[in-house]
Amino acid sequence: MYYVIKRLEISASHSLSLSYESKCSGLHGHNWIITVYCKARELNSDGMVCDFSHIKESIHGYLDHGNLNELLPFNPTAENIARWIVEHTPQCFMARVKESEGNEAVYVLDKYDSMAVECIK
Ligand SMILES: Nc1nc2c(c(=O)[nH]1)N=C([C@H](O)[C@H](O)COP(=O)(O)OP(=O)(O)OP(=O)(O)O)CN2
Image 1 (cartoon, helix red, strand yellow):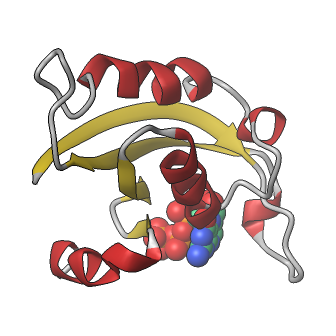
Image 2 (cartoon, rainbow, N blue to C red; image 1 turned 180 degrees about the vertical axis):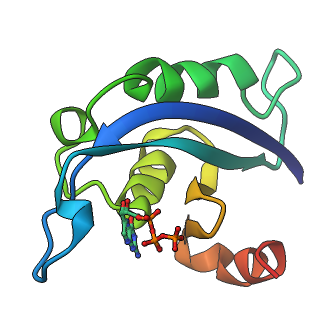
């Protein structure tokens, strides 16, 4: 099995729609650190799982310097963003989305859950 791991940073704003009072309901920004995990049993004809720059383009190219509430069709929590990355990135099975030093969410496809447990130890 081959793996590629791409880390990228996006600067973006969001506000959260929550069922309780929170400062996060106001528009604010983060420099999000995103880690994308892709895998393939066989390499493509270019000798890659997938191109690092294609991963960057589809996430950074779309979200950087944007308002996530306008760009994404869901409440832009770190968890929902991580799921969106997995669902929209070819060969991706797991994504980590870090809002700040202490706050990070991970989404992993069900069948790779044990791998995620190892990675986030
Ligand atoms: N499970 C989640 N919890 C929270 C999310 C989220 O996406 N998933 N997001 C937020 C807000 O985006 C908020 O901006 C985070 O605020 P921040 O000040 O960074 O967090 P803390 O209050 O915990 O601040 P510390 O500096 O880490 O103490 C909120 N929650």
